[in-house]
Image 1 (tube, rainbow, N blue to C red):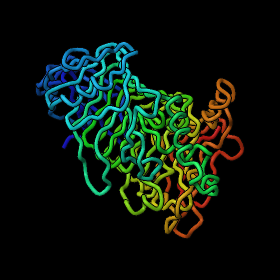
Image 2 (image 1 turned 30 degrees about the horizontal axis):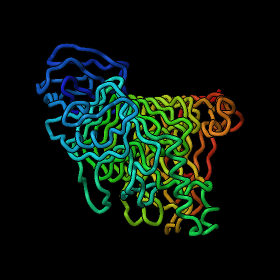
Image 3 (image 1 turned 90 degrees about the horizontal axis):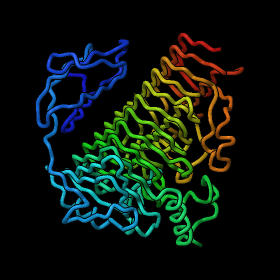
Length: 496
């Protein structure tokens, strides 16, 4: 069995592979026995291929694989009859776009030429292929009513009725497998949500609906007064109970909360995308939630909150559903603004087997962060972080998002490897930009490059962590801080 994974398009093959234990300086790529390129990254795209054709691809020294490009598809141009989208940035194109999505079969591709397509919630199905050409903008409305009626979803670890996302696939069912599969969302255009205006309008509307019904003590236990009414916001792209999804080449911007959210899904690949959500509270980029086999690479993030947030439910419901997030791969990504790559704090179903490599998180706030609360339950096992640059790595307790009935026991953090990292010991505060744009957010603040912290209960200390070949700069008096840890190994640590 080859170690190469192949993502097929009609005119290209994108290859990716795991970072070897002893990676070479460069990988040589061959197509049908002829050299076609080389790379120092763990992914490579071969373009200019024939649709529906078989090729032999070899990546030395990784392996060899047979691959087939996708067949050419019939183009459903949304601006042509029988759809008739205006694409002028003024007309409401929701009905025309939905008609095209409904008509899309396994051999079809919904095509958006250059233009601005204003719309509300859209719903796809299995075998949907959506292509946005260069200059095409799918522009979500800023009014909550455009995303009604509410649909069953999951937000911050709890299943609930939320406003629909701009793009919606699948039906939520935590007891079942996929019910929507073989989805492609691709091209060179932009999918842009209603952003801050939609987020704030949704929060205000929900706060009014809930007036007089909430326990003041519950509200006081939350992050802020917007926490509970903010949980009904939709996302930019919502994938629930989905399988075999690829999102590639696009700018993904300004969801009213998270941008790409996958729940109870598997085999989701996102590559070569730009995520933008500055100025949007909870503006996460890419959130695998109780999902598995999710892969992210070649992406750039400018997100107000987490670039990546890996989740698996919140106590007590998440403990009962007990669906982990596992087999997650994140590599060759760059965070230009935001929190960085985070796991948690919703980890009640467990997080297993996460590998992160070749990421530049130097301009993020937290770098790589594993977070939970003492009453969350679940835990994180099997995290590998290699060849990254970041301000710091943190495994710690947090006090926010802590409402809910406590789980029977504290989380377990164990089996972590941090290897070949450059940790700057200085971070940029993305949160400050919400109140002081261009001010405190641009300043660098000193921090400890390594913070590892477990929990008080017996058996719940952080266990089995290896820190190897770390280059620490700007680290101050205590570059490595350990609390409630057992079995931490330090090898070849350079602190300047």
